[in-house]
Image 1 (spheres, rainbow, N blue to C red):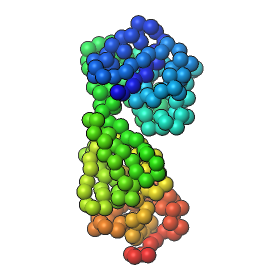
Image 2: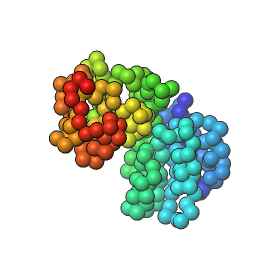
Image 3: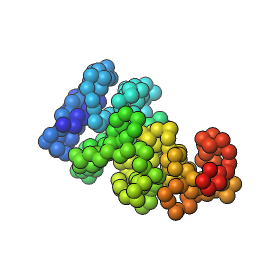
Length: 250
């Protein structure tokens, strides 16, 4: 059973949000809290699958404070937060982008169109989860079906047409929506054995066969593809491999 936590200081609004979330699935456990401390205690004592938090532009907004605290809890490093706001604000969106990897900012669902969007987002975020178990594998959950991937069998991951593809050493490919599995999220879960070489590409370091930072290309064992290296990632490659060039087979 998935567990949803709602933080909203207004009692009637909180009840309304709970009612909307309950329409997504009858099997959800939904709890709402009116105070930061109660919400934080719930998050610490249980495992929350999705946070729904009301926020404002107030300097000491409890919603943003709560989200910052939750971000420091290890078990929630990959958990999405839906931020709800009365009046959408670009400054707040920029702030959230700087601080949080996995979030959606939505208008408070008080009209039918906004309610429909809210339910769709909640449903999608609860349908897709990513879990890390130990240091050797990651588990992706899609429509309640778990797929466990051995990290040593992942050759590279890329994005095309808003689809994230895991390319395996056995030439198989596994696709997931970019909206729910952004590369930043996956990179964190994959760990230090993987390196981002382009804005849409992460590769397994163990399979790097050759590269040239000056010419901006890289090759992997088991793939005939030549990968482009982005300017932003050259320093990371040099830090990982100690030089700017590697010849085939070395």
